[in-house]
Image 1: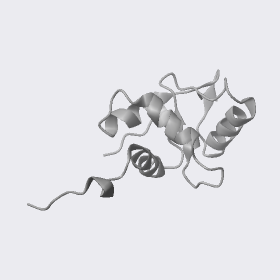
Image 2: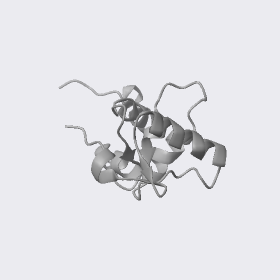
Image 3: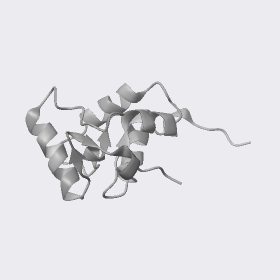
Length: 111
């Protein structure tokens, strides 16, 4: 049986970035959904920390990740960032009604 080198395994943040890269245009996922799908159901906050730490020139589509209520979660920290997230989602034809995305319509589940 081959030996698995722990230092070669991707860390949690890398796994978050890889997952977020796979979200199709026009869809969203939640922080908690990512945590569950990555096998760490109690790590929704860590998903947020991972995305918050992205460099500004990153190509990871962070705006496709929202909270379980269908809202952006960055509104408390930065109105500009929250507005940018909403604008990027609306550009992808993800609609907000009363500040929320309808997860029944726009939530993506990988197959």
